[in-house]
Image (tube, rainbow, N blue to C red):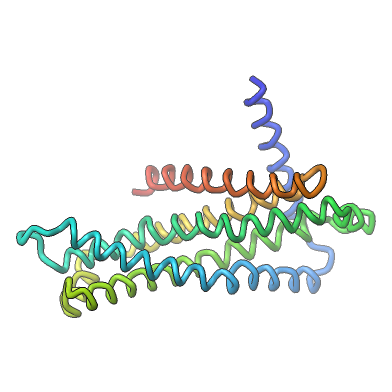
Length: 249
């Protein structure tokens, strides 16, 4: 019963934070500057890790798929089709968002937690600023815009990585890879991947913001809140992945 009570308390507090966060801004110019900074932090600074992970994901996926499909009855272009669909449906959206939950989520939780502990949030509230709108909303909106862009880029780089691995290891030729990419492509899969990325973006920004905003204590509690937010975000991303797959596929 105590766990259910605690869960409902967290859910209620989280819902109120989101509701208050999306109220009308006092000064659009100031909010726009904060929003652009968050876009830079979440999107541009996450680019290197996303590109590296995506490239190696594609390369490993191609080699492992070729290893499993050793039968001469299976045409070589099928390998490219599997790499394409795996990248679009699961690998790029889920793996990249779990990594971003660790990179971006821990930063958001630590940043807000530090502001709460050093009483900067209290000072802003005394000045009459809606801190939930000023501190939380730009982070969530920036994530909702930048994460799908990162996922689209990740899909392209994953397929490119698969292509490079296929060429260098002589698994399949350029023509076979291109044929596999084109054959049986469903545009709906891209829509599904983008839907997942938007849902995951909300989770990996809103959950750490909640834990960071409600930190109580000192530096030790900031670390705990950051760790908890990453763990909860990863679990919720995997749960959302399962539910969206169940509903949309």
